[in-house]
Amino acid sequence: MRLSTSTLETKKATSITNWQYLTLAVPLIISGISTPILGAVDTAVIGRIPNPASIGGVAIGAVIFNTMYWLLGFLRVGTSGFTAQAEGANDQKEVFLCLFRPAIIAILFGVLFILLQKPILQISLFLFGGSEAVKSFAADYFLIRIWGAPFILLNYVIIGWLMGRSKVKLSLAIQILMNLLNISLDLLFVLVFGMGVDGVAFATVIAEISAVIFGFALIIRTTTFKVNDFKFKMLLESKSLIRMLRVNRDIFFRTICLLTMTGLFTAKGASMGEVTLAANAVLLQIHYIMAYLFGGFANASGILVGKSIGARDRYLYKRALSLSAGWGLGSAILLALTIIVVGDQIVGFFTTLPEVKDIALELLVWMVVFPIVGFWGLQLEGIFFGATEAKYIRDSIVLSLLVFLAALWLLVPIYHNTGVWVAFILFSLSRSFFLTLFVPKLTKANFS
Image (cartoon, rainbow, N blue to C red):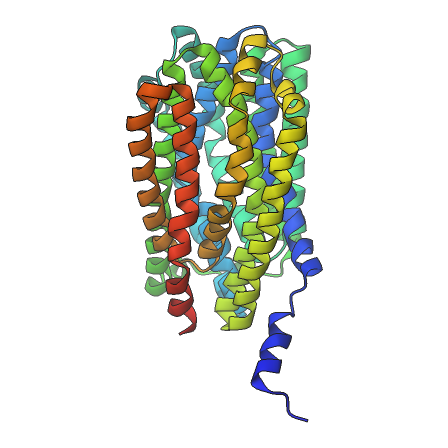
């Protein structure tokens, strides 16, 4: 008996079950959430030192590196999207070129950051502000961590490539190694050896270098690609190279907008004193953990979308959107309830300073609101990245940044630090709203 078209569509659309989706997403969640956990542990360990300036210094230093590395975020998300599409099309040569091309970019930029470390530091401290004590701690942290730049960027490429190939367990293994090593060295250097901010920075650099060595070892051991099959001119094939550069350009501009928001947010907090800056840093760490949790679902959906486009499978594409929406909303509600119930204990984990904790608890309500208004924008970003249609992400972020700037201008003079957080929430809501408007264009561009 011949199946009807609708029956075939239903069968294909349900070929990815919720369990299969979770099997892909959960390792990605664990892998992704490890990134903010590094910052969370740094903040928590430094928070045991009775000096708010040290917390603020690490916060400023972390923002500087986030600014540098997020500008090159395409090394992960772009690599993942292109690799997933090459996998979907079963083009093994292109799969490996998707590793080599961005790896060269990672090394070049990493070395450039090291060479320009002093002007980068001076400009950053001028822009972010803060007291002299905060700037001193931030400089100590920066001048040590900068030596890990080529390695963290290479790690972005390795993780993105493995994710694009659905090798999520391998990417998770790399992240676990880096996290455990960083956490162990944090505790050893700071709490045992009393190295303070320097200890936190050294721990991170050692962990970043170790992760890259381990990552390349895994790739060599688990792939059959032969070096003799590789020719340098393959990297310069115009069509693929131009497409990669175009997508990376759009991701770059998107990241500039995102980091402009983050930089202004941090600078506003710094202008209101060390205690306010420290309290904002604590809440931002909580926010990062939430965002990266959503990122696990977003990355899983992005991998499925990339493969669906490579294989021209419209049904897999629709299923990916459906699963992303359902699991994203459920996670948002669960996270909001968690903050309501145990938010006090979570803040207490990050700092024991009463004045910092009091301000953080006053503003904790925004951590209840954030997952509800922000989850869908984060989910959609993963989907658009998987489709390598970054121009829509770029445009939505530009519009959201305009909303954020207007909110800062109107609200901060009246509500001060609360106004900063309201502007942040409006930015998150705008990302979800504007990117939703572009979904029909994405579908039409790839499955018309």
